[in-house]
Length: 457
Image 1 (cartoon, one colour):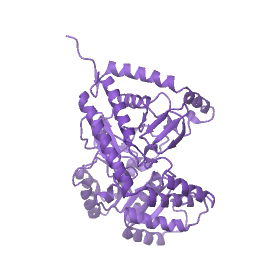
Image 2 (tube, rainbow, N blue to C red):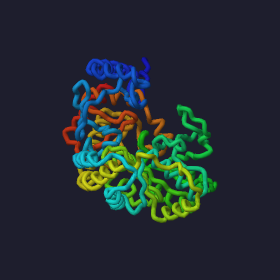
Image 3 (cartoon, rainbow, N blue to C red):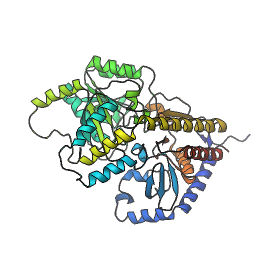
Image 4 (cartoon, one colour):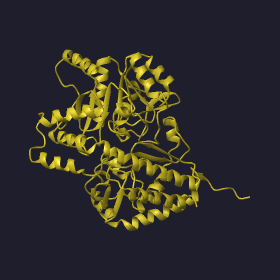
């Protein structure tokens, strides 16, 4: 009797190889202008692109974009793609929302940066508190910066050194969070470039949803802060178990650690983010990427109590550089776009549209998975939807790592792209924006159906 061929997440390896070969040839054939432009770029840019991760798309080479409006993107070869990547959340509310575009034009006539507050600064503060709750805000260019600054505050007010993060977490490129849990020990993630510090001296990794592990780490008295996303993203998405966030709040108070909630991806959950929707109460809230409609902006807010503690600390420290802040942060363009986004773009009506569309998408993907008999599942957090090439639900970062199948996922991404739908390159994430139309969702579901039908033939 002949043995069954090897399989990856239910897909026969020979079928996967044949599908990849066909889709790769199709992509090469249909995107000659993007390929030629990237070859020219190699004469100017390290690796041929201005950011190394632009080469991390699962296609043979990245597309070169020409323009994007709403939830559609046009590339150099003239393809009009339904965009469910949306700048990996940066354009979650659609490309160039009209109120933000108007704000940019107005502010551009009045100056781009001058190291002083404007009237819009204070209006943005009012809108931030209305949207996210009562915090004392600071503004950064990226959520990476905001997380880095938040950790400095936590260390300052607690006098402690270490941050607790969750295995498989994502908080941008903050050095302290680039750790993993291996055989019960915290160590630096493999592949880090030019790392000289012992990251385990500054961070402790615990599995997500492991309350006993969290308490054991906090009981050492070394933890200044818990830094967490409400839902693990940028991996195979992991949802919090019932009571997990309540336990984090209780334990952080019991052991004197600062609780930092990074909502950069989970702003998809609803108006005010996951924390507002689910009544969480962090000490510091971080939001980035789409909060100003796509203009580089992040905000981080301290509760009034923590703000007072930090002000008291700040009054006693020696004069000199704090290690926090950058010259172009809190510029007037950011505040103009913050005001436009918070008042006219990030609305209950927009979220209601996003939620309906994401539910339609998740149901459609799940139906296809069931029809072909794939051992996969679908996860949704508001407007954010992911298919995962493994049974679920997943409980922690280790399970998420085992559920990740890069070659198979790359094949699905390429199949969707060749059929007109763009999803996020680093994982299987799709976003539904206020500009996304039902027919775009249906086209994505149809492309997913066609792709899985071939893979599971």
